[in-house]
Structures are given as C-alpha cells and as structure tokens.
Amino acid sequence: MNLPIYLDNNATTPMDPRVLEAMLPYFTNKFGNAASRNHAFGWVAEEAVDYAREQVAKLIGASEKEIIFTSGATESDNLAIKGVFEMYKEKGNHIITTVTEHKAVLDACKHVEKLGGKVTYLPVKEDGLIDLEVLKQAMTPETILVSVMYGNNEIGVIQPIKEISAIAHKNGALFMTDAVQAVGKIPVNVITDGIDLLALSAHKIYGPKGVGALYVRRKGPRVKVTAQMDGGGHERGMRSGTLNVPGIVGLGKACELCLQEMESEAKRLSVLRDKLQNALTQLEESYVNGNVEHRLPHVANISFKYVEGEGLMMAMKDLAVSSGSACTSASLEPSYVLKSLGLSDDLAHSSIRFGLGRFTTEEEVDYAIEVTKKSVTHLRELSPLWEMFKEGIDLNSIEWAEH
Amino acid sequence: MAYSDKVIDHYTNPRNVGTLDKSSHKVGTGLVGAPECGDVMRLQIQVDDNNVITDAKFKTFGCGSAIASSSLATEWLKGKSIDDAMKIDNMDIVEELALPPVKIHCSVLAEDAIKAAINDFRVKNGLAPIASEKVHH
Image (cartoon, rainbow over all chains, first blue to last red; front, side, top):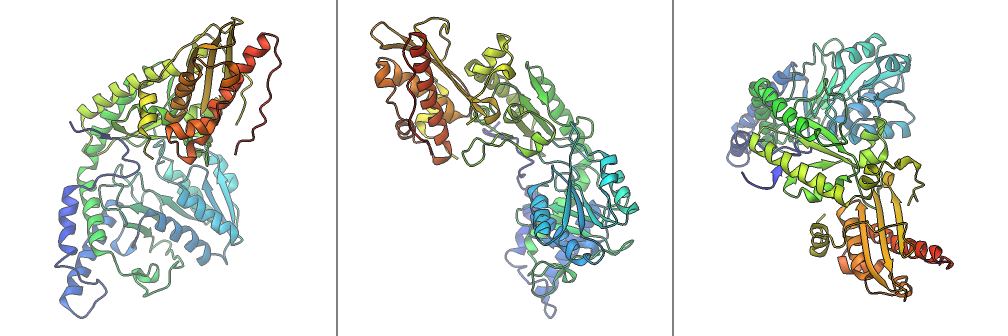
C-alpha cells in the first residue's frame, strides 16, 4: 500500500491507464484537426471524435448528435444556463435552481440575474433533497429552465430527478442537470429521467482534465442554446473552437469503461463506503451529513463534533480528503452546502468528505479508518470544546467572542 | 498550502496541553474565539506571588496553525512576568511560525487568549484589567 491514500475522488479522479492508452496516438501521429475535411489526417481525427460521441451518448442514453464537447463541466453549465436564457428570453426570464448547486451553476445564474433574469434558489431539506412541493410553488408562466444537480459533490445525495423534470415539463420549462458526480457512477438516462440538458466532465470519471460535454436534447422538444463563444461554428454552432481530439477520445473511453464496470463498481464501492462509515460513526458524536438512502455509492460526508476539519486533515496527513471547513481569513465561512442542510457552523467546520474511487482498495479503507479514529481522538484531547462537552457544559450557554 | 516545519512540529508535538484549576485565584483563564468561526482557544496561566508565570496550559479547537500558535504561546509565557507577557505581539508568533497571510488570524487569537488569561488573573486578584489598544488588521 502506497501513502498517501487518495480519498478525494469527488474533486478529481486519477486517469485510468486504459484511457491514457486510447488517447496517446491522438497527440502524435493522429494529430489531425477534426474539422479538416480534405485529407486523411482530418478524417482520422473526425472518426475518433464521432466514435467518442457515441461512447458518451451511450452512457447517458442519448443519441450521438446530442453531445456537444466542451472544456469541462464548468463550461457546460455556463453554456446551458446562459445559452438557454439568451435563446428563450422571449418566452420568459425565470430560472429555478437550488442553493446546493456547484458554483459553476450558481455563478452562471448570478450572471443571468445581472442580465435582467430572475432566479429562484430553492432551499433543501435537512437531508439535502429539495421539496417537490416547494418546486411546484416556485414555477411561474415565466419559468424557462429548472436546473437541479443530479448528485451533490459534497454530500453525495441524489435528487429525485424524474419527479423534478416532470414538474418542469408540466409547466412548459426545460430541465437541466449538472450530472458531473452522477454520470458513470449510477445509471443516468436522459430519456427516462426527462433531461433536456446535462453537463458532464471527463476528469471525474477517470478521464483527462480539460474536457467535458453538454447533452442538448434534439427531439421532444428540440432544445437550442445560444453559443457563448464566437468562432468557427463547431459543434452544431453551439460551441466554437478546434476540438480537443485526444481529450475527447479520453472522455469517450472513460464513458465506455464506466458503462461496462458501473454496476459491479457501484456495489464494491458502496460496501467499502459503508464499512468506512459504520466504523467512523462508532466514534462518539459523529454524524453522517445528507440523506443516506438516496446517495452516490462512493461518498460519505461525516462531521466529527468538537474537532475542526482543517486541523483534522492535517493530522490525517497520509489521507487525501476534503473538509467543509475553510479556515482562512478570506473565508471563515464553512461549506454553504452543509449550512444549507441546517447544520450549525461548528458541525460544518467539523466535517470531512471521504470520496472513494475505482482504485480504492479495502486495505486503504481499513487504514483510513484507523488513521481517522486516531486523529479524531487525538484532536479531541486538544479540544477545549470536547472537554466542556464531557463536563456537561452546554456550549450554547457560553457567550462566544465572534471574531 | 504547505505548513512550515515549526507549525508541523508544534502541531505534531503540542507543548503544554492541559487544564489548570480555573477556580484557583492564582490561575488566569482566557477563552477566545467561537465554534462557529472554526477556532476556539483556551489558554491558562499559573502565576506565583511575584507575578511571574510558572506554568501555562492550552487546549485549542482549530486548524493546525491555531494549535501551533497556542502551543508556542504557552512556551513563551512560562517564566515571564505578567507585565512582560502582556507585551507578546501576534506578529512575533507570525514570524516565529512563518504563518502565511491567511493564517494571521490564528496568531491574533493567541494574543487575545494571552491578554484574556492575564486580565482574568488580574481581576481575580483585585487588579484592573488592561484594555488592549491594539487594532488588528
């Protein structure tokens, strides 16, 4: 077992060697521009791109003509939200999203607001899922788009996508989903899920960084987005720019592997994740954040009360994990996702996200359990809050000097 | 962000972790910060009849830099008179631990904890608390 151990697979994933192998020829001898129509170099590149388009489409139940390649999910989210707003502004100017979205969605929505659009940010319940009744009430005749993420990047909860898209469609709005964390991990199908636009990224599914895709529905209804970059009119005019052929080949291969291995991999990871979670919640005063039933198989977000997350990560120096606490003078605010669940700030500061992946072994999980338990215990010995808790002092009764 | 060797040293081997009897009139206790902000420091001093600090203990809930700042503070406090201890400046801690700008607030918290502990001792012993005139940026 090599240290440190990588358990931050929601941030990014290592590239699968099989993906790299597929990509390599397209850097060197198969270097052509996929838009070069008049020679073999271009044809080879175009063929590779077309094949990748099919591989991506297959993973999400789409047709290859509905896949627009981008530089990643941030671009896909921007293109979908701003592009729909521009394209459909005659129809309405209202967009509905949620408070727990990724910043790429939230900030694209803020941009839309600056352009005169109206955006409703739906709250989430304690378990991180949205309330469908609240969504229904938020719909107006002006609503053109509902954008709700498939699986959450911090806590892994899976939103009721079918029900949400049905509500959007019933009211004449399009449904978009940032499915970056869900695609390739659990079955996602644009037809049965009723998805009109879907953003995905290669580097979260063992592919390369710098490439992603936007699914844009072509039939029932035919969805259009206004391009956000001017140029050569690539990707059916929706996304100009010479195609990143090696990256696209990598994304395609990554999707193919996920489709082949998803079912067994999801089972394997959920067993390991549950082992980790069960062991760590045996520690006193530790809590799992978010709904545990509707959740991605590889994620567990756990708060260890009376221990600060960043300090804890430093103690677990051989584990690469992520914390909901950002202890910097620029941002003393803990994770907005955890806070939106109604978690108090101190519990949000005490959270650690464990993200397992394709290359995580049981041995690594066992090691992570031991290190985490040891570190939490050690830091609690250093924690004045733990001492007060043990003495039965109600921390809420103390007048803290906020700083 | 990489931590300095000194931060790692204090974090890995924190000095003077513990608790003094806060009801003793020879002990001053400073509890600063807030759980909501992600750091709480408790610093305690034991003072002898000559107003010299003979022992110091801390417990901290916070990041590595906050733990290191309070550990360092307890080292510096031991052997100092309470008047000299009052002069410890947060920037001395920043320099010693090579704290990056985003972690300066950890040193500020340690300075606040020192002053709070000394003032707690002063008040217990019939002395007026000393107001801090320093403005932190």
